[in-house]
Length: 346
Image 1 (cartoon, rainbow, N blue to C red):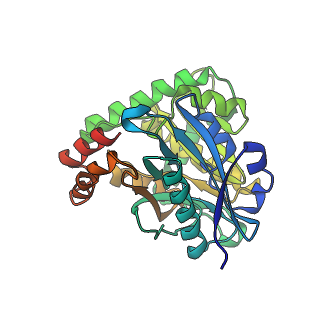
Image 2 (tube, rainbow, N blue to C red; image 1 turned 90 degrees about the vertical axis):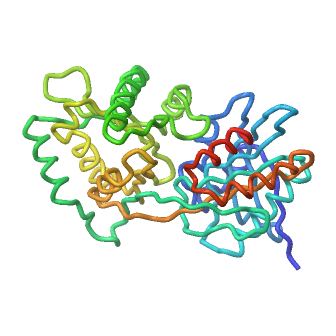
Image 3 (cartoon, rainbow, N blue to C red; image 1 turned 120 degrees about the vertical axis):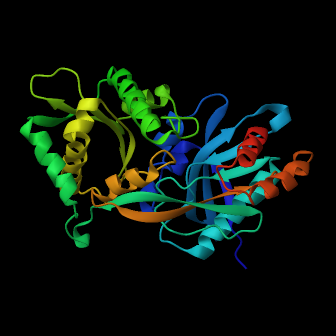
């Protein structure tokens, strides 16, 4: 009987045959190194079956001190050569065994830019689900279907002589943050819910700088003819034939004249011509999710359910808290009780 084994390897070893695996942008050396520091270090795993590498996973080894213990955090699940429920389960089982041997308190697997729709079915992992909106750019999928409303916004933007420009200037980080805060104010005033514009764990301004330095982070600006200041700024991750729209911020003029719509409209055509396989517009979050969903689907994105998984505490004495975690799962995810539990365990 062949048993799945797991090996913690150096980044160079992990990358040797990475092109053979279906990796999302968050399961890449570039991404995990961009969010790595002395407290949450990049970590790379190969999964082997009969001596052959059959899965790969990159994430963070999070040091939380003696009281909270260490944690393994991944933005997405193991990358496989082809979707296989059996292989996914075997990889997750081996990861769980590794965590217990190393006295890791928790394993958290996210669902960001997950290439497959498989869900972890390993005991002691608790699956969770969310939606992402992905534009399929592969030629065999046919033309991208844009909504009439998006086309009208694009025409409106072009009448103002708006243009899309690619820049790699780190100074644009400051302008992006200004626009992200403006977008936040717009949504709070409209929907009454606050959120963190840097929504991914361990993502901050320095992460953007590192992605730019590694040439996988790209700025796209929408400017009007004669203007020096961009009215809409997108920050995309482009790696391994996939693209993820990480951040986008716009000012009031951009909202009024559909400038952000022009950006994605132009980018989708550019990416398809360049042979990019998919353009992930991300999820919707909580603030104005129905409006965001319509906006993403207007750009030809398909709504896809993706799955992550988390464990309870794996070692004593923290395992004594597990009954509280299990109780918390019975409440709505945005309830006060669940938020209290999150504060306790994070």
